[in-house]
Length: 570
Image (cartoon, rainbow, N blue to C red; front, side, top):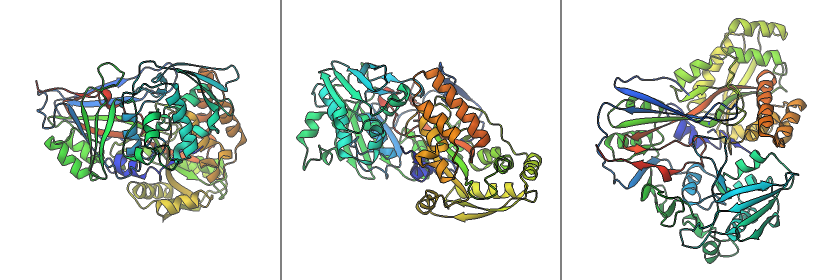
């Protein structure tokens, strides 16, 4: 299993987290500087969850003293500005980039999905219901009847089987999301026209397996259309790079590389009254300054990549709304315990007590993050809101004395040479100096840094992690299970108690018990782990005030534009 490092999420860092002095992940699913404007009201919508996970909260700041502004864009068309330069393919078996997955989710359906902003409860989509065998290995999905693809072809079990087997056969980068459970195509079988059986290699927690099916890799493809365009055994993949064969609310009408992506409403879409709009235009606008100008003028309806400073500038302006949501991305300081004296828990605790977390969030990130110190992001089951660490130099020095290094020590901190990481690294250097810890900052490109990091070759490292899907296993394994050779292993932290607990949680069938296991893991990692979690990223999108029901995606593949509407001036 693999998650997304901050290096992989660099576009989101620059696009969504550069969101105001913030270059993105990231994964977060981060900041709190507020420019207060008179005559604004803040409405907070919180999803109530039956589990103890801190709820994903969407906050919308709206100007209420004037009537809704006049539209310059067509009333039946949503115009979005974002950086689409990372897009490679719109084939769901290949898509693994931010903008690719964003678009794929508009044009394809999946067996199950989340309904934002709730990232805890799985909802039926193409599957109306499902059962799992007592041993946890055999899943039976009942397919919704009456669904048609955009081609007019009926969607049946044949299409579901074809789509999932196609992912395994094509062996593209994102296929691991499915193949970590299902290694052979023949493990996916048709029972009848509306029933599909999936046999897992080994049992896992039901909520774990279902959450991975929400990723766009599991989108259902029109078998007849794909095969009609197949060449050289590619199952239609070349054609599907810039065409669609889905049953989702929209159809891919045009993709002009690094210019514009046009989506039009699917006339056969099965959800009554959706999509609300006839067309979506995604304009490639990589520069935040250009997005700011366009949203101010009303030439676009949504700006996704403004910097935090720019967001603060437009808050409260007539005709402008700001929507914030916690993304599933966290930034952390990794400490390689193979490097003395980082092997001592007192030293790692001392470092955690040296850091000015509030200063990072407020002064560097300008409110585009929240202080977060546990490994599972806010909004995901098992996330703990505990933040026990704060800047306490006296306590840090006491811990260094207890560790036998009263005068501190010297250590290298490796960081990418980009904003905001270099600014954060500089601040950490200054903070640790107050405790007697002398930090030498080493700047490396993302590719060079991660190559060395993956070989356990760094001392301190400033990096980030973004969840591949909203299940706690993705983060827990990365941070706490050295056996999977991810973040714990890269920091030489071989803790069997943590690894055993995480492996147990991955196969726990009782959701309540599983949640409690992850809360235990959070607590254990806080005190014993080789990380100082610094913050969780906040996405801040700016919309015109006539845009309704728009929620920023805390991941990068769950955004649903089918419910977004525009209201006329009144």
